[in-house]
Image (tube, rainbow, N blue to C red):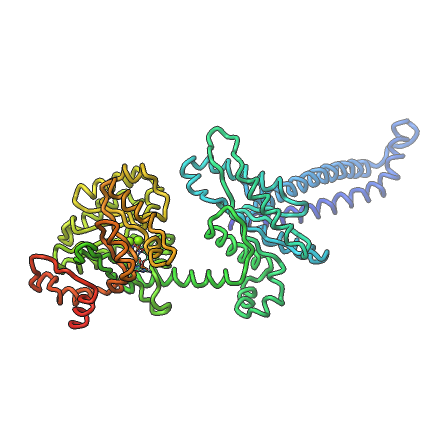
Length: 565
Ligand code: C2E
Ligand code: MG
Ligand code: MG
């Protein structure tokens, strides 16, 4: 700050001195014209010996005059040079402030005013403007894999590729990280033009990069917002949106906001594609933001509760254990399904905290059950990325004094796509301690048979979508039979999820020795409901459990809960 003030002060000082110099030089020239006109001829005449010597004072004045003119001229040249240098420095500073040093594109700061200008000039020509938010897919992984220097080279190549496709008059900016923006004027009646441009980007940008250190194809996700969408008429129809537009001050900011939302949608729908902004996306984002902040608050306020679903030996009808299923009772959103909040908790990085809370509560609960009953818990792929996961879990078991053989971890096939080596080490060390591992939702992912053989699973759980097909008239049980015989070949017992009725149950029973679970046996229940159920069945630790687990048919179970509840 001090430096800046000194610079400004010195600039003001220089300007004053220049003014004085100019005054002196002008005065000197005027004097030269006034005195030189008479003194110079006198000097020349004297030098030729044709006249008397001029007055020494006048000669001195003339010499001083000439010196002043030379001084003024030199000062003038210095000044011109100084101004040129200053202009150049200002130009460099402006460029630095407006462009991204890595790619030479405009930066986040300058794209807004540049967009506003382009929107204005395009409107004058009757054109619309599309704002494209372009994000490189999985760039973080590319960076992690190839190193940051290679990441930078990729960004430069991407900028060049996008730039080479840019129509005349369009703008290109790097907003930061792996995010670019294009601003493209187009004929308002022909939005296809923008679609075609996006398709060209999606086709061209991911071409292989001719760089020995880089072996990746980087695809792009694009969100588009148009000035057609931020027109006052649209805003007036949508009061909430109008308020938002007002808060966003400029058209450019509104476009950026909407394009960002559309880009998020493109990512969500599988990446490597483009999406135009639509109003429901904004609502979806609002809901998502609410869920995000709700999860964070809920974690602090203890709003998450483990529920339990019975797992039955289908052959004997015995209750063998429970699967813990997370439930969220949000005071603002009501009961939210784990299928909604688990993926968001994973994305915002709180899944481990959430799972820890639930597992702790479930272990406490399960410690009260008959020790023959098992507890299954679902583990997210994100948790499996933690190299200390198995140690932390085993420590938890010791802390709760929970026998490892009573715990069954359900992991999904997506765990196997990410660092298979690590997962194998984790599974092996957990199994060595007695914890059992099931492959959940089998059939919905892409696990290869060799993965199935090489990973030491204890059980396969057939996804409920296959089981539920059994009740349709056109049911084709061949796939389920194939999975069950695959399990037999690999020596893996199988659990069928989603048994909703007797028809499904009876069909499944014909296929082999299975465990099963589903709404046919009752909906997932809270810990206290499970305790009540188990007390009536004498399966609570302190309720005098019998030597054998009783055979339970659904009617019995409903009755026993009814009696005690
Ligand atoms: P999942 O592990 O496959 O759990 C089974 C899901 O099927 C549960 O849904 C359960 O309520 C539902 N279900 C059980 N029987 C039937 C049936 O007969 N018919 C139908 N239509 N559905 C049935 P829920 O509780 O909504 O959980 C959904 C998924 O959320 C779970 O699928 C699991 O992947 C995940 N999840 C739940 N709790 C947790 C958790 O604590 N941690 C993690 N990482 N994921 C969890
Ligand atoms: Mg499960
Ligand atoms: Mg499942």
